[in-house]
Image 1: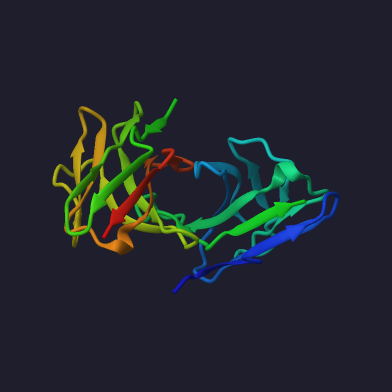
Image 2: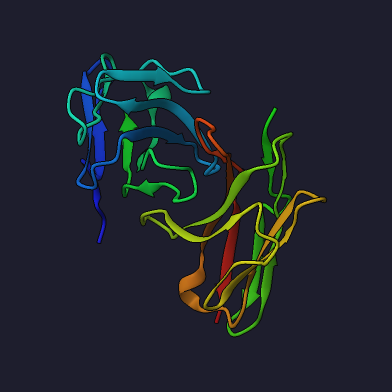
Amino acid sequence: EADIYQTPRYLVIGTGKKITLECSQTMGHDKMYWYQQDPGMELHLIHYSYGVNSTEKGDLSSESTVSRIRTEHFPLTLESARPSHTSQYLCASSESRGQGVGYTFGSGTRLTVV
Amino acid sequence: AQTVTQSQPEMSVQEAETVTLSCTYDTSESNYYLFWYKQPPSRQMILVIRQEAYKQQNATENRFSVNFQKAAKSFSLKISDSQLGDTAMYFCAFIVNYGQNFVFGPGTRLSVLP
């Protein structure tokens, strides 16, 4: 059973709309991440956070923004959606103690901008 | 730069047969962790197996085992007695000790044929 939850699971939205993708985890993990997964399935890190009030941009430039006001919540916002934002977005979290435990992933949000 | 290469974009195997997925990586660090993740179609990405680089013994998890060759920077995944449920994208990843974020490979799409 997943301990990290993403909503919505699927979203179709018109160009220019503002959207927020939700991600919540119940494991108390300090580190959280957003990945964009392209049609070829490759993963690109777009945002990450090491704790409350900590956010950083990832390797892939993204027009989205994130916030981390609570440990368990890491929403991603697009102020004005465009067709180029169509993709799958994966949220993940990990513990701070050591890197050996790996990531826990959410089920993803598949976004289509028309 | 730290990179992960998976040279097989797609593979197929007959049910009950054995298949090996290749992964090579590049890092100048000596302490790191290696992972294989599985992403079934339209489902959550889950951890299959992990390996600590300072351990010479290859990790095994039921039907999944790895062949870790540190000098060659190779980390292949062997799936024995393949099952239809093994059909998925498989991602190789690593993170250096005290590193910031994971480095993922581009993935290998595995199809298990009945």
